[in-house]
Image (cartoon, rainbow, N blue to C red):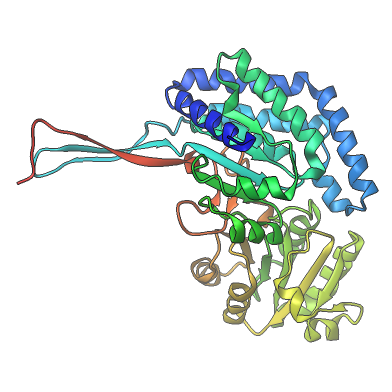
Length: 415
């Protein structure tokens, strides 16, 4: 038996034990995990410093280094996220529906854990904590495989969580980390069909596609985010400016950051110069189509490749369209089914956009940055699902469950 198969076997044993735990026992353990993160802040930061130093030495972009960075505030946020998960209703045992058949069978459909979840992700150590907490709340064991960029951070985080589980009298194999970051080991993890029930990749679009193409374990595909903001002819332009700057600049390396702005031609001459100046004041490179460049000559010409690119950086591209129908057509062609927003004071335009845009989350007059499990009230998220089967959008504890039918009879046989 290989090391990975042994981890899988241990995870299955832990998952069975977790499935028997009551809500109070799980919540007490989550509280211990949250407290342990804060108590070990200095150790976590020391390990993270090594990852940051290696990232800078290897030429990682500043925006991506920011995703990797852990600070006392960010560790507190991770701890608070676990507390919020603790306070959520327990999804396990929840009855979705129940009925009695004509033959007198009493049927209920109840929520049960998925079992063993595999998480394979890139340079965001907070995913280690979010995934562990959500999987645990939903009664699942988790096998984590983070990227090499965050290996030192992930090791100390997983050790901290495992120790807290052990102190809570719970099998620490509910949370396991693969510390071998080789591509060969990642590939073998993706093939553990006998041990892992579902695999969730989280990272860049390129990374997720690689996992989808190579995995044999069933996958929930999460979120590359080529997110758009459409400014309608009936938009409040001050509102639009504020929302676009927030969506692009607050944290440009994350999947819910805005990458494209689509402008109605009727407001382009008035709005684009102000938008360009505000973006440049925030060090954002602005690219655009020929119409945008005609209005602001300093705009960098956009290529065909730009429209489908998730930058994860201080770059944005602008498209000018004739109307809302063209905006919807353009966005549905190039988006990644993640998050899209319309800025408008026109109710009919808002309803058309929200109905016709094909994405997990569609906004009116709000920043795409709100597509987040914590912001949605889930405590944390294991990812943003951009597919349509099983779950879509931010995935909390409830999305990490499946159902089983419990059928109570009294001697019935089928004639």
